[in-house]
Length: 426
Image 1: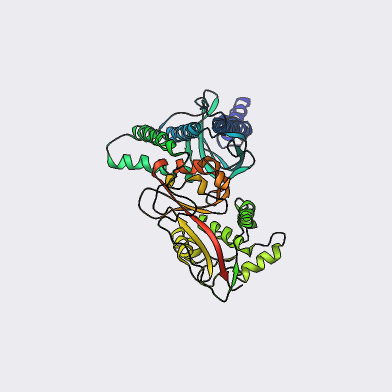
Image 2 (image 1 turned 90 degrees about the horizontal axis):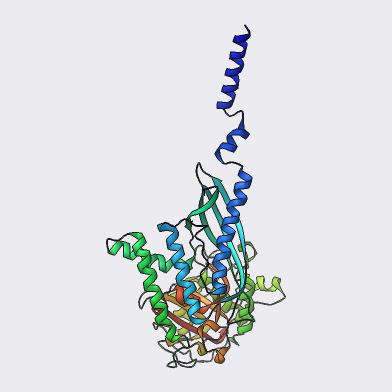
């Protein structure tokens, strides 16, 4: 009888174990302590970003091989980083300070891996503009890490950061146009981009062919008299708007946010602010101005706190065509360097308060709009002394040289809008 009781007791314990009544034991078997695993994973990712930004500070690549397993996915991000750091090194553009903040969105545990999604934010300063602070916000990243030899390693990286778009496209073009491996396509693209950026640096001090008063493929608005009130463009007010709203969370913005592509919408806001729509120190009046469409043109150039703006407000091509040819009421601008590579627009002609539009290649639509928030005006001698602010992704005081290299170096085309006095009914 005693033997039978012992047998049933043993059987009960076995059943409880199999069906998970001993969760602590099973948890220790599958992930070995989830809390310590999370801490270890965050430590690896934090070190990855520290190495990433430290490379921009020292202009020497920091080895992250102990953090990242090399495969065709991680090689892509490694090579992009090498190309961009090398580009900054060629012109002596480094970060003097940086402070990264990682906002973890989700951490999930799979059988043999941990998946992480986060938003990366960073405040930093450039060596070429030591009196201006710069920052980037809400840059999305996704990581996969596995436990190797009692330590976690990154085995997968993904980000929709626009800084990477054109390099990725170059790799994909090689994969579709020739029978080559992805690793070969990545290495070939990196080699071509490095050489292209080296060729680009010969233009770093600009080209004296054009000037602030030389409108290349653009139209100088006439000053025809209208019965409406005339308002000058206050570039400092426009810059202050950009400073305040370049990285402010969507819930705190006064205007709506264009879904997925907010760059031209943001630039139009800066223009609107410069013409007096923004009342500094009086948010109630500023919001009333938005609601009542003060310094806007009904159904032509307008936007609001809710809903979308008209095409002239939020589309790059429409905005350019409108402001550079406008002779009626609404914003007016002198256009310069349309359909020309960036180096035909000398840095001494780029003033804070200007708006720039960018594309990669000699044809096609301009795909990105930014607002110039820092320059030395006519004293500017290098592109890396110009800072711009933008949305999608949100950046305040982004260095123009980094934008040029990300958009293809010599293949980067930039046109400029300089804003003039304009007429508005209110």
